Length: 285
Length: 269
Image (cartoon, rainbow over all chains, first blue to last red; front, top):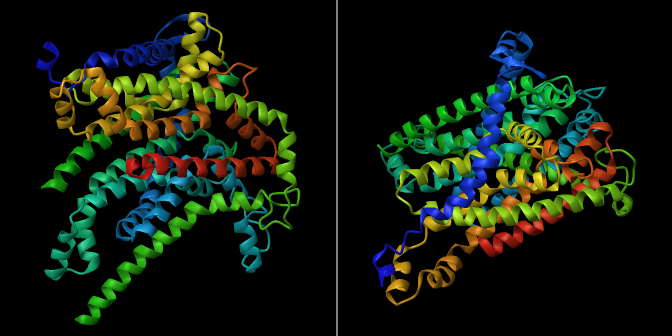
């Protein structure tokens, strides 16, 4: 009878122990090791210190790679928000069958292989691609434009690849808004633009913050798309880490770059979480 | 006044709907373009193609390197998904309804691989295994994939458990059912869609993973996305377009099945 006295709706925390142990050994321990290795002065040992970090932070090239990676994320996230918000807005206002179609179009890129998605952009942006063919047919250009291996092309491709991560939280946030609020705003004489700016947009802030966090984190770590659409000319943090670790076998430096990149990502996550808490307070006030 | 209102409404709706349709085209275009190009009769990725044929799909049948890589990817994805579901569902049960602070900390830990750069984790795992003297193998690959795939199972199972009405569990217990019996007959059937959706996303994430595989595979274990990536870096091969076509069709088919069985789209919003 003892079991009946326990709260039957709560399972024991013990059940999480196997995964906790698995993470301790295969996730936390390797990351700690990465940190220790980043303090090594040279690949073959030679004492510990912050030499690798000093090398990174004192090198204009390395700082440039970090800066352009973080800036790339900002551009992709902004484009995703601009294009993704209307999709979520349309989804919430559509009849049932149209909701299904929009959802399929949004989910498809999320689940197709990232190499396939990136490959598609190579076909679209290439010299014989669809954009160049259309522009030449219209007589707007004589010779094919170079769009592949440019930053503009990369931003558009990344925005398409990551947009589902923006649209899904936005749909959640917009669905939660009481439609009566917009009606009330209209009855009180506000136009559609004003209602959107003063009611809908502020109330959807939690969704915007959540979407931006996911898109940003995905865009700056998107190794495959960055290397295939960006080409060899543009270097971003993930490829920089891979080159140092794999081609040059400089593990301590690769570890230090990884730690710096991890710290940058964690800082961004922390910032967005802070914004998220503020925006939830704002949306509920 | 009335005219200004009309203008206001029209300009707003047209702007929003126009942008939304443009984005939907942008979202769908790459998939459509790849499907069309994969049926080309020519040797290049020109769009629109000069003619249509199934020659590149026929070529695919003989591409044994791709077959080999695909088999590896499917097998690693199946193992990682199985491991993720067993570990992830148990962990989700443990932390979902627990009021303890340690449960919240574990929840954040289990979800953290979702935002951390997978490449940094792949590198750290390689250092870890080589320090311990384990050569990279299929086993290290499956372990690495499980770390990055288990968050999807945990997240979806926790969400399903949060929607489970606790009164049902109390009712079952008060009718004399044991905890195990209640789990099998009440809890599990109700959270099964969440587990299926999480497992599906975990499988796709493993099948598609490059950053972890790059570091943790051995020379004999060629993975499909890496093979495709390396083929694309070298030359633009139309066989890859046909392979992409096959992958897109399989993904859509699986997605529709999971949508029917587990309501995938409801779980992602």
